[in-house]
Image 1 (tube, rainbow, N blue to C red):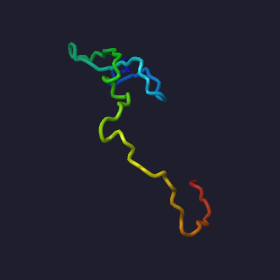
Image 2: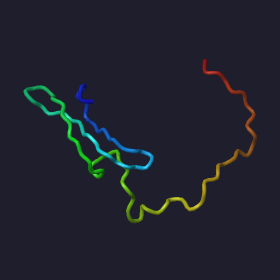
Image 3: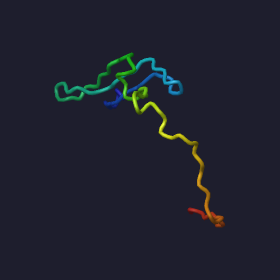
Image 4: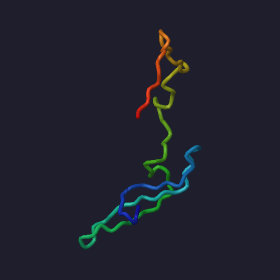
Length: 85
């Protein structure tokens, strides 16, 4: 990201357990008519856009109370799968 002067965020974390280790934010600064890339390092997960923040208040309870049941077609679908080419 720095070599191509891209703006974004890099997070070093375990995405399965949402454990955050450290992160880097990349950006550019205009210096003498050139966009010079730079980065800042941070260790607080609250500063990250990628880290999933815990839900608070009303949003903490699940939205669905019953398990999902797939809908079945009323008539059997008897067709031939076509080819795209």
